[in-house]
Length: 126
Image (cartoon, rainbow, N blue to C red; front, top):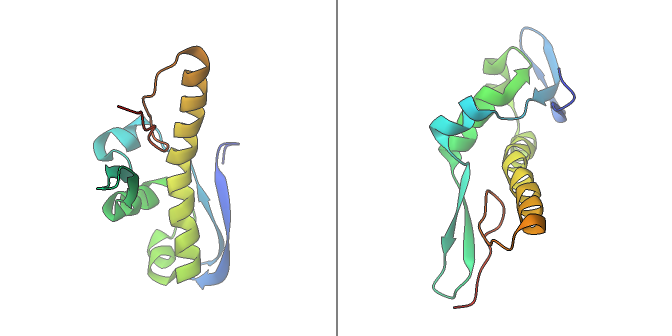
């Protein structure tokens, strides 16, 4: 486990070969991100706003790759309850959204660019 790892305490204990009380996620790296891309996208709406759309297949891909503990992933994913699953999804999305926000803050302090890495898109007036 590294300091970048994220621990999620489960609301519902899972029993498999061992008792699972928590899940540890590692931060995604290039070898995770490049084949799959982002676990969400932003789509423009007819009203000029942007709609956040989750990519369920990408979230599942990241869940399978980023869980470092427990080792019994079959028991984890077959028994994890709704509330714990929603927390896991949120943490996976959070890796990308938080990195995008940090990237935008750094970018905006050095340039006036409105490009977006992974956070909310910047809308510019035409």
